[in-house]
Length: 475
Image 1 (cartoon, rainbow, N blue to C red):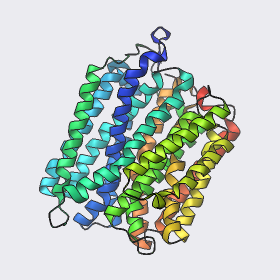
Image 2 (image 1 turned 30 degrees about the vertical axis):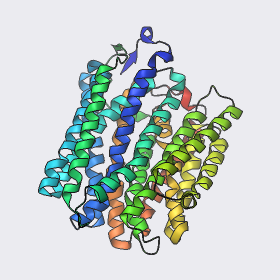
Image 3 (image 1 turned 135 degrees about the vertical axis):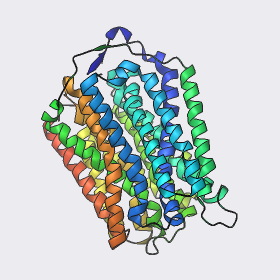
Image 4 (image 1 turned 180 degrees about the horizontal axis):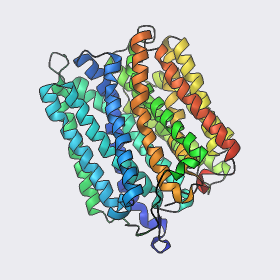
């Protein structure tokens, strides 16, 4: 829909400060998003909800992504791209203010202890993050060369995953312990101060961004692409469905981990203990994204990639160990998954479609293991899924929009709409959990990852010549 004027391209060294600033935003974005996994068991007990009813948290939050993206798409094909007109900085600021307002709405929701108000606050919060999803991801891709865009996006998403890793520990401590009632009972007021703090931090990030000089990337308008021409590309349609399944599967698994670990046949943990293991799930995604950022860096030799990936894995593992309230023996099993992740990366040879299929196949096996086993083996299986989720968003996104030409912006909007999977899939799993139990409900994400596996295989065959770093973004 628009393209960057070549005259504004400068050396990547000029983008260091803007990239650091936007990375800070990704961190907070991930932190607050993962707080939903803490809210679900908390609100479930507070309001005596069924699993289905508690999954309305994710339905409202991720449903906002679909509605927000749909509105953006309709405006784009009729009036022109809004971000192209307003600028990335204004778009990012608007998204932050909207998300902060959503956080502030938790105060009246908690004061009146009314579940629909919580859902309304989550919907507004989701709309804010929708704007950030559309603007910030694209902006990161512009902060440097096109060849390193995928590596750069994986790196910023790794810090997004860092936020999701510490959120269960810090956020769980704030809600379940620090701001809970003195007698330990559940009270809605425990969410008031934490979300006001989150709103304050978001506004501070907005202030920082307002003071930092961000490249404006002057654009020149092309003819508005009307209609649904992007849908003539079969790999885009398949990619939209794959993204729906990926976000749905990842969110559903994360949403049920605390409830899964509470099951007597699994571990029988309470929320205070389970939140630390939830951090391992999201911490795995952080490790995988750092490894993905290195693996997709085409300027490095295979030997250097191996050394850098090993160093990054060790460093991030130590960070996770320092965050979670668990002993080394309790998290040492994670080293096995890191080693398996290394093997999967090198078997995939940094080819996005092949690597995507391999990672999805591993997650299918892990989910089946979690469904049929008990105790620690079931727990380890469900926690290991996070590290193999790591590169799925960036790989699905890039493969889906590859070769779209003038339809790239339109295709991108459709892929972002597919984040609706985070709203729909957990609802279905919640229904199955009420009917057949939490453990058996994981059959839903099994089908999600099977779709991703098939999409990767399809792209390996029909888009095998397209590497992630060569995919044309159209921006």
